[in-house]
Image 1 (cartoon, rainbow, N blue to C red):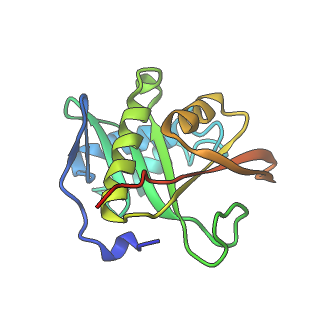
Image 2 (spheres, rainbow, N blue to C red):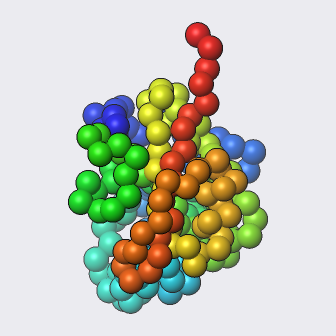
Length: 183
């Protein structure tokens, strides 16, 4: 995997039909707190990351500003995030044992669920990644109990590699391969 920390970051905002994928800004702080305090958002991730009060105290002025994190913006307001991170080599689930792998992650506020925003945002990030890192696969891991995430993985074109037990739950691990292009 190409280390996103060595790439020019952030890239120019990515625009889709309804969304803008951009770097985080100070105006996103309240949405980050809401996202991480939500028990619904954390249902398949071990729960909320803390109480709203704890997160308010701990959140930096501009949370989430790092290579690989895109804010999902709808009409000027943050509704979630899409991330590209290096998968921890110690965790189960790999397509190549001898190489680092890029893992796709996404979190949306519950008010944004059910509108296709996650699919639109993730597809745009995958397209951007395919241009920035040609030929590199992307992996995704989700609990099999998370029906929404399983449907999104299929819609995005991820194919199952394996299933395993982690965090006391069955996990689905898949890979997305960029389409080959003629040069």
